[in-house]
Length: 149
Image (cartoon, rainbow, N blue to C red; front, top):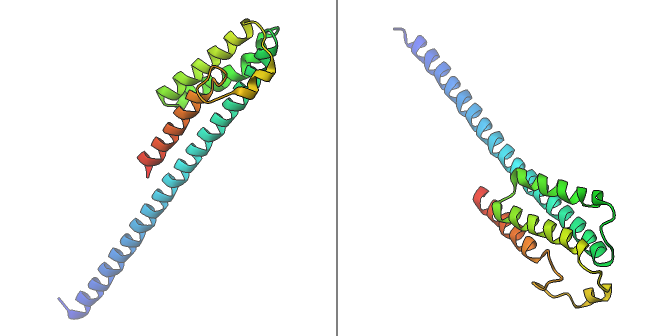
């Protein structure tokens, strides 16, 4: 075989190997960037849903403190949020959300209370039904962060 052919084949093989290495590196980089973006989006979606749940449950709990349940449709948004949590929430977070939802529903059937009692809310007290849910959310978000990093 002529030395020129050997040199040409070696150059072509080197170019092909370099191109394949560049392609593989680009693919791996884009794949890892996509995964990182998906993790951030998942975490942001969870955080937004948990915040929405906390706001809605708090609003309804205060309303239940002063009023009876005249329109069951009031609870529909909270129920919808809990149903959304069922799609991707950890079992403990979901369990705590369901407990909060049940507690809010039960509060509507209890005797009305004076809103001034809210001034004495302390963590884990009977007036803070969201404490355990908030703790479960914090643990889940920490777990999601540590598992995927």
